[in-house]
Length: 465
Ligand SMILES: Cc1ncc(COP(=O)(O)O)c(C=O)c1O
Image 1 (cartoon, rainbow, N blue to C red):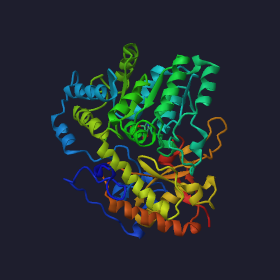
Image 2: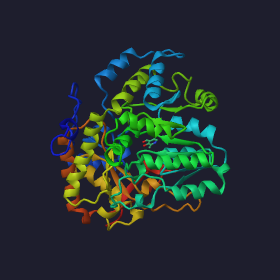
Image 3: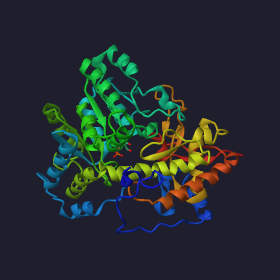
Image 4: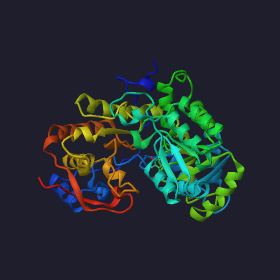
């Protein structure tokens, strides 16, 4: 057994040591009560200085390495022909195998350019489960985002190894009705809105078959492609002895390209890109990207950010790093599981997803059980998680009714290389303590409902008790 990868008690040790620290402080319970009330029970509106352990997101919150910080100093800030862009494009080509890279300021910048070019009004983008900005950009150009994930993805307790998989039958039925209505197929790996669940190589291969059969392009939302590759190595027969770089290459070999928010697996605080092999499509995307993001050799990023990203792409696919990272998430999940806290299973890659619907079974969907859980965890111990449930789901565009999603969860996302095991122990104790008094907790109602992506800016209040 390789102790570096399997560690002690099954948890891999960190393949880094700490060179710089940032102070954090737990403000008092009274202050936390005041802050959350002032901010309409919305944790997005809190100031980070009032949060002790911030597990709102794993996006853009990574700690960069000394090598990346060194890259920041050597970034080439030329408007055109930046050497840092060359380093980035070469890392993308080396790791993913795509010849053309178009940088963007972050994932949604890439999505905006991509969808403007690829989607004609009324066209459909099927996928496993689209992330919310992805869906919003598709809808913004009058396209329709359709989720075709397997049904088991909605069963929080079901322990399938690849719950992010596309249901190939559902996909084919949709595509074959009218292939000309399909703009492209998108696989999101891992599947953020579905509990960080991975997609198998076999499923990617089968999706490629559909895409080739009906001549519809296939792309990957690669925000967490490295974590997905790690799960393939751990869970998919035939991959245990393969290097992660080989697995990542095989994943990409089924794709016509990818869109990536580099704020996740490229270990940077900002950035994204589109990568592909089709020169003609690149030539259609580049001018739009100039308009939306910037010249093709910077696309909304500074040279230093591209330099750090080029380095981060290599660090993010390192097996020792991933064994520790995914092990840390598993460590927290295992502690909560032991205490009987209902969780999404199997445990995902970047976050622990608590089944808020079951945790707060006495609170109806319209009173946001998982948001109430998020608020209580903040009150209890200054932890900031995020609701992935009814508040996020918003309203049905046709009926205007609030959507009651099948999965209603609180996500505790682990920033990369930021927190230690002691922090995870603390988080587990806080959640356990909320769990013990869950039946006393009330639901929430709107004080103000924000019209677009309402979870970001809405204000809530406790329902009358
Ligand atoms: C799967 C996925 N795709 C796209 C995005 C959007 O990326 P960004 O936040 O960089 O705009 C995210 C962000 O969390 C994501 O999780």
